[in-house]
Amino acid sequence: MSMAVPSASPASQSFFKTACSGLATLYTLTVRQHLHGKRWMVIGTLFSLPAGLAILVRATSPDVPPTGLEFLLAMMLLPQLLLPLVALLYASGIIDDEQEEQTITYLLIRPLPKWAIYVVKLLATITTTVVLTAIFTTATFAAVYVGADAPFEEWGIRLPKTAGIHCLAVAAYCCLFGLASLLTKRSLVVGVIYIAVIEGLLANLPFGIRLITVIYYARMIAYRTLSYVIATPHGEENMAAEAWQLDLQSDPELLTHPPLSTCFLVLVVASVFCTALGAWICSEREFHVKTPENV
Image (tube, rainbow, N blue to C red):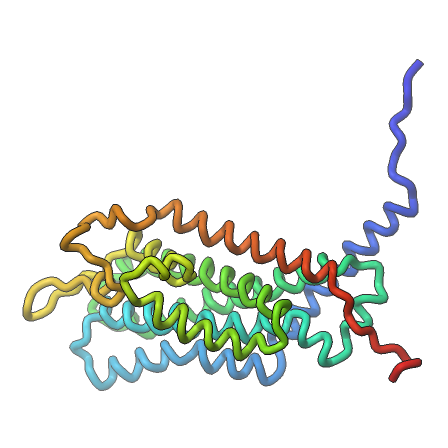
C-alpha cells in the first residue's frame, strides 16, 4: 500500500505566487525610483567627476603618466569618496523614503513579509549602484586612456579588475548603510561622519583600526591584483604603497596583511551579515501605517 505525499495546498501556492509577483514588482519599481528624480541627477554628476577631471588634466598636463592618473581618480577619488557617498544616498532611503512618502502603507497591507521587503529593496539598490559603478568606472578609464600612449592590451585588463573591486565595495557600503538607516533616523549625518572619519581618515593610518573599514579590503584586493608602479625622475615609485601606508621595507610581501581570498571573504560575509541583521530588525519593527481614518 503506497502512501501519497501531500502536496502544498492551493492556498499556500497562491500566496507564494502572489508574494513572488509582488516582490518582483517592488524590485522593478525600486530600480526605476533610483533612476529618477533629483537624487539621480546628483549621483550622475558625482560619478561623472573623475572622467571630467581626467579630461581636464590630460588637456592641461599631457605629460602625466596614465597609470598615475588612473590611480588618483579610479583608486583614490572613486572608492574613497564617491562610492560610499553614492551608496549612502541610495541605501539610507530604503525604508526612510517609503515612510516619508507614506508609500510604506501600500507595502504593508499586501501579503509581503517585512523582511522580504527590505531585502528586495536592498537588492534593487545594490543592482543600481553596481551597474552605475561599472558604467562610470569604464567612463573614467576611457577618459584616462583613450588617445594616450598606453596600449589597450594593458588597460583593457586593468579595467574589469578595477570595476569588479569597485562593485564589491559599493555593494558592501549599501549593506552597511542600509543597516544604519534602520538603527538611526539621522542615517545621512551618521553616514557622512563615518565616510569622513572611518573610511577617509582612519583607513589611511597604519593602525589595526583600518581592519574595520571597507576600503582597506578593497585596497588590498587592488594591490594584490594590480600594479601602480610608475617611473619618475628619481626612479620607480609605488603609488599605492605610499598612499595607502603599506610598509614595503619591513614587509615586502605584505605578509602581515590579509591575502586576496580573505579580503574578498570579509567583504562578502560582512555584507551578508548586515543584510541579515537589517532584515531581522525590519521584521521586528512596527511601522506607522497611515490609513484614511487617521489622515
